[in-house]
Length: 621
Image (cartoon, rainbow, N blue to C red; front, side, top):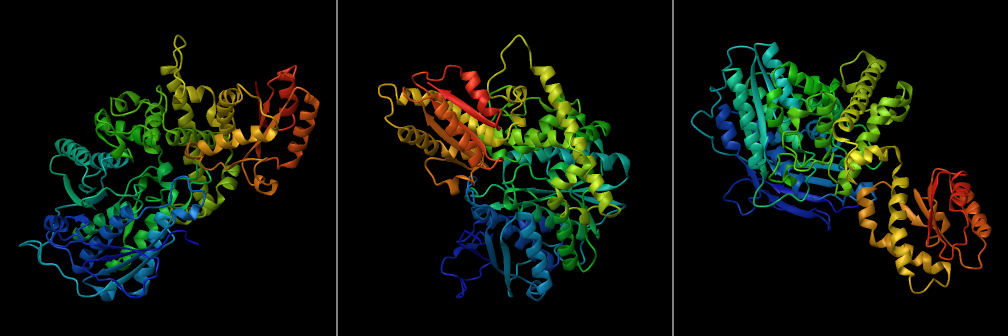
């Protein structure tokens, strides 16, 4: 059940409906500057002028997808630390005035549109009502059916974001074919994005005169910053723009390039599901979009991604082969450019930045990539953001697993996700599809291991201390081999080692409950920080909540207070009972407060416990 109130969006001048739920969140959207609801920046006339003419149905498509994208950015999802996964799944409802209402109100059209969006975004639902009567004047003198784009030979239409993947494939097609390449770019208004795309397009034109044709489409929110930065529907807008250009060129295919690791996006942790995981270039997404666009065009349309069997390191090598090594540092892969600093074009800490940096080392092209483009150097400097630290460790942990497990283990662990892939890729049956996916992931894992070795060889100078909290230090300590509950237990133990002696410096607790109260206060105070760094780990102080609730926590904290007259053997007996009380898959942090040094041998006491199960014993004085 969706936890959020449903969102309703009234577009192109539609007035409110009477049959809305009482808790509906309503927003009016328009891209016409004369309207008071001008919240969408959509330069549709400029794009139409560049392609001369588009039929009404495709004009409707571009307006519809622009409104979907704007609504996606306006409507917030649940908080990132929300434990209820469905809090991220929104109910998105659109009432839009269109030109070709008869077509858009066909049940099969609305079903295919909604199905593609729901899978791509992970939202609960997308519903549409289309109202007739919308029209716009011609964009210019040549906005008539008798005018169209003329091409003199073979062409390809390519989505061009300015990232490494699309740049690599454009260069490859230019080198290996005689096609004219039509680049389609989406711009949301950021000056840095425009500069990146313009710089790369100019370089391509200089290298291949007369073969590069660049078309851009500007769309985003007007007058405000988006509340939702995941932008899961951006790819739907991007694909619709590319389709419109391909239609003008009489092409029934276009290319959307993304390396397979990013495209498949297999789970790196259990909470990265639905809207939390990007599926914008997933093979099933491309298949669903192709099916919808085929309905719209009344011919078979294909969205193709020949890069799905390549890793990011493979993309680097492709660029080197096709003469694009000098363009690497001009491309932008960052998914959080809005967080970048003036010193670089990349934030340095998002998944795409981490993937790119390690791929650079794996391919031997790190010097071409790391030319001051990263705002933060997480390899050698402390990682301040808990979210970035978690992203980096998840990335390396998954790659380590890919490099270590057999194909049978891979199949068992990813069976659910593979079911969404095998029918949507080019393969000779299910077994061949799984073999190809396994080969991709295994190669990626080994490339990341190679990158880690290169990073350590280049930056781990034994003459100097490694900065605490840097990725280099986390790798050296093998943090990625530890489970999140264990990492959280170590973090909490460090905090308690400092706070408990201070809390009871002048007066020792009279009973164990006082110790539990202090630990409970620490947990509550740091809860948001813990959830940012360990988002899938639930934790509980077992003496504060009932046993039946504590059994559902991934990390349990048990506190024991050894007073002057308490025999350590009695504490050991209590811990032994706790060990058998909770399931083996739960991790336990035992906090032993021993101010009077009743424990004679800490090592022997600790080893006697950890030999019985995986846990941490923090003895505090």
